[in-house]
Image (cartoon, rainbow over all chains, first blue to last red):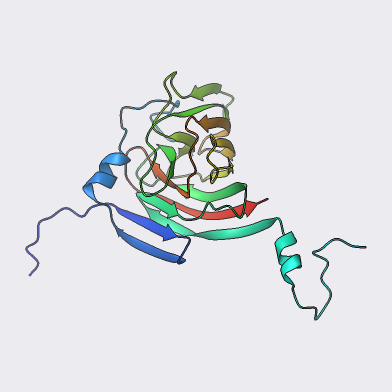
Length: 51
Length: 179
């Protein structure tokens, strides 16, 4: 039985043009904080997306 | 006399022919995750680059998309940009960076229902010059055009794409270099 209660971290895709290698892995804490800007509002965003 | 490339059936490609091709697909794929990070894709082989994004969705809701230049680590400052949009329902408006620049450029906004698509052009990113960006695209709810520059005369070898809430983006991408 899996008793691991850790939250899964978001994943990222990392591509290296020198090797052609594409790696998919969990983001580090530093990477997660570097893409999180919830207070930025540079763009009008409607509260509800209408189809 | 014709200028290469001018291929004939059965003809071998020479270095001259290949070097005369001014447009090349660098890389591409389908992404699902919080971050797409590419390194060593901007080189001295090409001066300018074009990134195509399509079928771009953010399944958790409407999101602002961010894009940054990078080498071993991303540049987190000095992104200046200005754009305008016109919505499917007749609205319109402007969006822009602050006077001090932002942490990222905004190539569009995405949602979970209608696809975002975008053509993003980077001008001389691999040179120690200030990089320009030009975006022409369709947000989840509007046409969108944007231009900007990165206020640092630095050569970069790559870039990264994310949404500013840090959750999942799904999209297909292709990167081309051209001389």
